[in-house]
Image 1 (cartoon, rainbow, N blue to C red):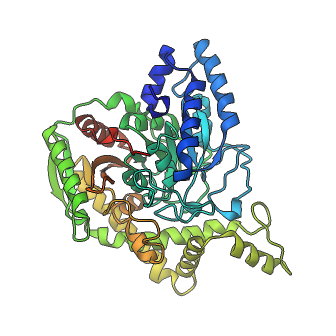
Image 2: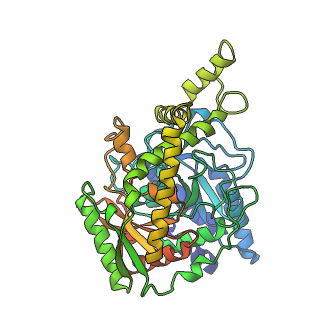
Image 3: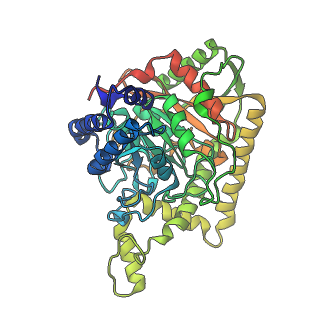
Length: 484
């Protein structure tokens, strides 16, 4: 048995039965990293010494019967989530040497459950991008075809899971940053409801959109991780005081009679034919399992990308003002204070981050605020109302996760608008704050993965996990592995 290939569920069984020890799984994973990481570049920082120390602690806990859900389970964490005493770079020159002085709520919860940290994964700088090409530490490559992108911004996390360089990972999703890379890399990516998972310790990009979630090999693994990281947190004012069910216990419930909405706006000209065919077959599979497809409309979908890129860049412009070279992060000396600010930001931020700060500052500026920012907020409300109306008729909504499979590296870097449009099917979920999951549903003729996206009502992750799990059990797509 190749231990690096295990899911969380399989690793738990192997550890509990004594078939494997935590240190053996960690050893197997680092050997795997040694053999494939050069081709993929999924990690910014590897925490090898700490991982083996964690594994030895886990072995002692298992021997003494004090084990928790994740005792001895090696996970990777996206490098915009703070881990105390370990570099948290956001894949930016601005924070290249920043060591987080505190633990994020999600990683503190993982620690309480006994997880082992393998390392911090690569991302688009400050999570701004759809391809993980905007990283100060080099682009990440797709394990299915290393000439293609893994998606973004959680591309490093998705590629690490797909390439079996960790058992599972945590990413963050602002406009599709968990689901789109999960689709491109052939793994499962869950974006919880806004407020379901604490954002304390997540380096902010757009605070009203950002949400942490799991990237895993199976739907059950996503449910296991959501059980751990979800829940109310007083350290995060946007965290919702909503009861957290046991998602794993609800997975096996029958999906017979569940209504699945099929929005016509997501099956339009421009969607890759093989993507559409695979997603439609996926919906047929759900129908064969007893679900009832219902045609619906989400009429404001076409305005979502424009609204998102005004609101998210406005929030980014505000959030990134803290990187001034004074308190922490990069400082470039200047002739005076203003010159120091300018030089620090000139050298510290990459081109895409600068582009978004400029866009956001413009949208918030006097004379343009009403025309852009206020209008975009009004559109956001309309998108949210679309979902509320749709969920009066259906239990979940099924769509493609992305309009195309993974594209070639460098293909869209010169055309930001084309890059932004790759998020067209994921952005509405973040505008509305609802949960969504991407599961593998097929492959193109070039052997590239395709993702099926299931969206749900606010705080109804149980339904999307149930539908996704039923689909996964009825198909074999999630079992396919890239030939690295």
